[in-house]
Length: 376
Image (cartoon, rainbow, N blue to C red; front, side, top):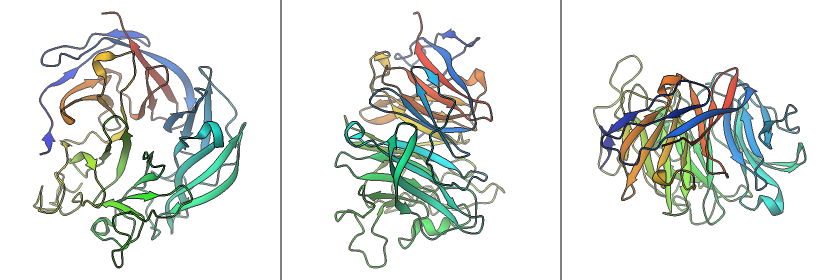
């Protein structure tokens, strides 16, 4: 059963660049004081952040630069050797994800928009990071067919415990009906091996006419994707149209409804579908109407915030806040709205190796923010 805007959403407040916030506790016993600080600035529309084993952070900028945060300082020089990206509207460089065995193989997986205004698509490559340069680039996946719109690419990735890679994709905006068809990559999550091939146990490998990489379908624009090793759950979120942003629990072979079942309407106000739920389609675990435009997502397993253990955190673009979602018996329940008073478009949120939460501010003068415990 999906959960639509659980009522226990707790607003927090802050007043300075480093400020202690006391979250209200009515109905949310796990509220915890925290402080926010700026780690670095000078980023142009940063998109994702991820950590290497030595605690260096990889940060992508949508225009096509890969930056390093090392020892708490953002290096001026970008990493060399990236492919050319199609940087227009929502297109550009998306995620840089280290291989689970990066310490041994130095491999990084990179998603980005590739192509031209007339023919572009989401592409994933892998390369080795040698110092400040990517070498030995290999193309692993390119979504098909190409499209002529500069929006709805998806681009988030996560590894499964068997070493395969999930890639979240979008419907290209003008191609929403294709999300229900298995002969294309619009509105899909795909699963590939690290050499780019489709695993033999993918759900549609033996389905006539289906692309073998497809893992799930019926998505609009996947923006958050993670595997929780403690529960074995793949969590995903996606943008709805006008209303109907979703959090989903992803299972292989399932149909998540778009555009046949949706809680949103068209931007024009027109009805997209009369159905919010349909037989054979998976209902979302949680729906946001009005839309918050969820962007990044992490599940907290650190030591600094024991009351937040196992909670989902979602960064919001249009909502301009961070949202904490308590998982009760593995189901999204109560929510806490954080940082709304800062009025920032938040692109990504990740738990760092130090146990703090890190946020990327989506702006031409983007920043990295860090959340640490405050005084109770």
